[in-house]
Every structure is written in structure tokens, then in C-alpha cells.
Image (cartoon, rainbow, N blue to C red):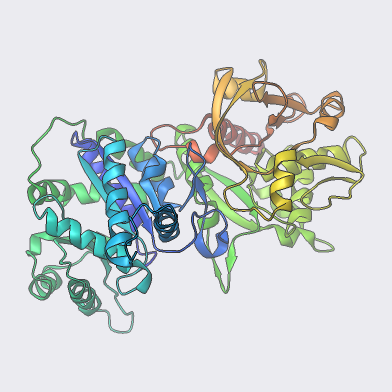
Length: 537
């Protein structure tokens, strides 16, 4: 079932095998026809995660990087759109020599070749491929067919793990295994039998349920792994390790024992992220992507939430993050005093007009009341606009994205982007991926980074307008990070004597935050929030 935890299971398997000394790579195969994740609505699909290469991917790729503690390659991600686009382009160039091009074998073989290529690019001992969606989805049949052929050709070198949900209906109070039995049977109908089942549920799976599933699915009961609900996803590798998951995978694949580092450091971090309950810091995340129908989800800002957790641990506190709908602060008389209970405010990225006035109002309140405020991408642009309007008196200050006819476009579109928008080119056309920047000495950013040269991941079309940089700097706004040629503004901040932490980044620092390597700017923000709480006491 989609959203039941395949991504975390995949990430955890990768972390476990890595800890045992194996070189692994993780591949996400998404069944949708979008060529990448960049044009999809975050409230429907969740966060768009950007790799160093600039490829816009599914949020699971972020989990993969965080669990493996390393950057992934473009080869580690594919969609049906990518696959079909490649096959059609090859057909147009007569790559197939005039053959009738069909889903089987040509689309299937394209998938197989991409999986093999990803393993070679990463020089991996083990490739772990997550097929998105749900068993029975028409969209992912080709990926399952590719897995079937790979297992048929390499029976001792390929294993299949099915992640399945076992519901516990509250009125019954009994864990039901029938959906899992049916799922395994449906998978078998595609010619692919599972070697292991990860049993997701609210509760640990008991012996009786394991036995029922083992008989029905034709696998040993020891290969049914319990995966109950837990407080932190970072506990999953440790839980799987206790169940001997790594050793069982090694047994099925006949992998030799190697000398690894183990999960000692990982488990220490996992415990730390959950603890410090006596030293709680409250953070407000003011965004526009929290609501989806009658439900509120945080997936659109997943990497930001995780980055805060890692840096909270580093600052020896526990962060409680509350999502606030920016639209609320656009009402005639919003209650800004609710912001006083928070120790810090984050204004994350996003696109479009919705909630922008509310975000600007929150930024102004945080600046005037000296609440630590951290702006990410669009958040940095809005911090610049707010400062131009309310401090420098440029009342019409705006961004081209909201009002291209504004008298003071302090945020404007890049010339090359203007042409792309005019030609209707939206997908994969922004400033994407890893770019270098230089940090100015004596600033908040320099203190946090402890270096003058950085490289961070971007995803945006608009920049601080060069025509206003001198005006903004003379008015007291410090551009502490700039592109190497000095033309693009990467970090904007206020001096510490004016504000304890008022800083925005044009890039997305959350994309490089790891449990074992918290991001320095998030850590500086959490320390400022911690100091505010101590000062309030």
C-alpha cells in the first residue's frame, strides 16, 4: 500500500547492509508518467527532493540520502515517464533497427538496464530497488515484470521483499493477515514470489499471524519481519537489526561476512533525536502546503522537519514543530500573539501567490519582536521584500512572481528563465542542483559554517534583483553569502546586534542535512531558539 513505509524500509535495509561493510545503492522506481517530480503538486505527492545533479525526485530519495549518509546519483531514480521517453527517443533515432517497439521487451529491458547501470555507477555490492505504488496498480506492472526477468535470469542474485500492512480494526481488536495473503498471491500472479515480508502494523506481529502468513505465502516464518509503529523512523534500522534482517538477507543472497562499523553511532543518534524531552523548543513552520482535503500532512516540508530534528539533537534540545497555515495571517485581525509562544519561526519554500501576504506578516512580526526567523528559498525572498517595504520604505516592493508590474521588483526573474517561461518550459528548467557560494567573514553564516566556501542545492527561478542590492545593503540588510562572481545573493541576514537570528537562504539547506551530519545553519537556528527560551525564563 502506498505510504505504508516502503521508503523507510528500503532506507533501513540500505543502512543495515552498509553497516555490515557492503557498498549499496538505493533506487526509487516511480510508476507515474511525469518525467521527474518537479511539476507535481506537493500537497498530493509530498516534497520534491533535489539531488546534486539538479534532478527533481520523490521525497524517498531524501530518506535514502539521510539513512546512507551520502549523496545519491541521478541514476538512482527513475519514473515511467523517464523510461518511456528514453524508449521513444531511441525508436525515433532507429536504435532498435526498425523493429516493432513494444512494452515487452523494450520498456521492460530499459528498466532492467537502468537498474544495472545504477549499480555500476555506484560500484555497488548490492542494489536495493523500491517499486512505488501498490501491488495491483496497472502503472507499476512493467517494473514488476523487470524484477521477474531479473530474478529468472539470476535466481541466486535477486531477492524480493514485500512490505505489507496488517490492519488491526479497533472494533475487532485482532490483527488481520488476509490482505497480506492476498497481496502475496497477487504478486505471484505476475510470476514473482516474495522471499521476505516486512509486516507493517500498529502492533508487533505475533507468532500465530506469522505462521498463517508463512503457510499462505510459501515462505519460512523466520522471513516475516515485524515492523510495528514506533516514535521515530530512525529506530527502524535498529529494530530490523534486532530481528536479524541483515543476516537473513545475506543468507538468501549468499553474501560473505564483512567487517563493518555496525549501527552503534546510528543508534546513538536515533536515541538522541527522541530524547531531551525536558528541554523542549517550540518551532512554528509557516507554510501553505499543510492541508490536503480534510487532512493535514507535513510531507511537503519533510526535509525541513528532519533537518530541525538533527540540529535539535546537536543543540541538546528536542524540537516540537507545529505547522501554521500562512493564510490564517491574512485575515483582517489575525492573532499574532500566538507566535510569542514559539522559540523560532521557519518560513519554508513554495511557489505562487497563496499565503504570501500571511508569510510577510509573520516575518515582520518575527523581525520586530526579535523571534529567531529562518527563511528558506522563497522564505529568503520574502524576508528581503518585507525588509524593503517596512524598513527601507519601498512600499511597492515585490517579486516578479507575484506582481511583475511592481514599481520595485526587489526579486526578479533571471533572463534565461524569462525565455523558458515565455516558451512554456516549466519542468526541470529552474536553477537546480549544487552551486558554490562564498561566505562573508564576521557574519552569522560564517560563524555557523566555519568556512568561507560552501556548496548547496538550489530549486528556484527568481533572484534578488541586482539593481536593488546596493540599496538593501546600505539600508542594513547583509548579504553574507554570494555566488563566486558576486552577482547572485545566496544568504541574507541582519547583524546579531540588530536581531538574534534573522537569516534566509536562497538555496535549500535542508537537502544536505543528515542525522550524522546536521546542517550548520539549522544548528545555529536551533541554538538561537534555545537561547530565546532561556531568556524568556
